[in-house]
Length: 96
Image 1 (cartoon, rainbow, N blue to C red):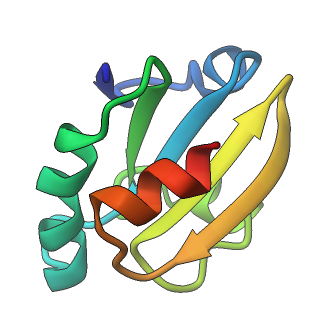
Image 2: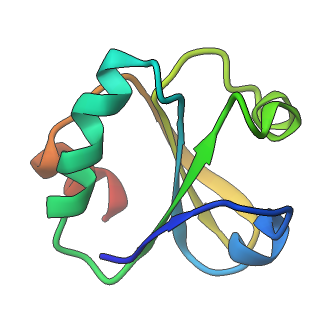
């Protein structure tokens, strides 16, 4: 699984394909717990990590009120969303 840390405003370009977005913050305990789980996921899907402190407008645009929030996008549209910690197996089921 390829993990991309959002560094600029290329978000709209990235979500044109099937992609998993992890809205997180560095100070968030559950976000720290989910990070290694995402790295262990066996999938060809890319993960884009969006720091809600750095990209506050993007978090507001997608209604992210709690973190971690995982949003699965395809063709620029939200397919589904998960709020809170989930483990590797549940992430893989979420993606499928």
